[in-house]
Image: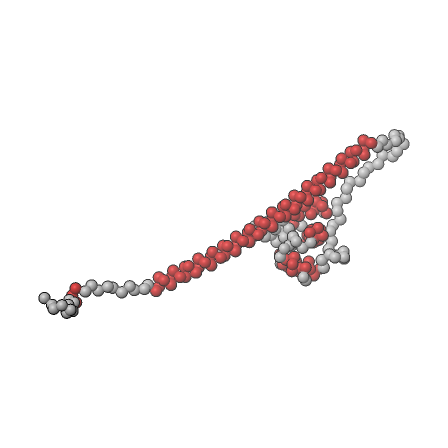
Length: 211
């Protein structure tokens, strides 16, 4: 028996060796690269979703404005028809048998729009229109956006095109903006600008207004 306070020697054969944990550098690097790639993909998907949401919001606003304007026009037409009907029932024409029959000429279509006329005071300049077209469509009058919603040099939606055409150029209602003649697209863009300024083109309109 060892005296008190003496150190008992340790039998080295009873020691248990603990293996060192080796770090798998290659696996760690691979996981880091995968994580980085996943973040890149996430950011790209988020950007695409943001662009899609912005396009949907723009279309919803255009549809809302078009619906309001269409209702206003319809109300004005109903009012005009009612007034015409009242005038017809209260006015009696003097009968005659000697009047020469006349034929009412059919309504003539709007004259072909042209971009060669001088702009009115306050209208955008030719340089501003060029900046707008280059920004919206690279100046391509027949281009169509990837989702098919925006068409032509000024990227009209069909709803906005038909709304403006119904107000200012009836012969163009129902025409695909991307297949309309360049002069017609120019005339429609001017008509839209005169009603709403640069707001229909929230990004490119800023560039054009500063040109």
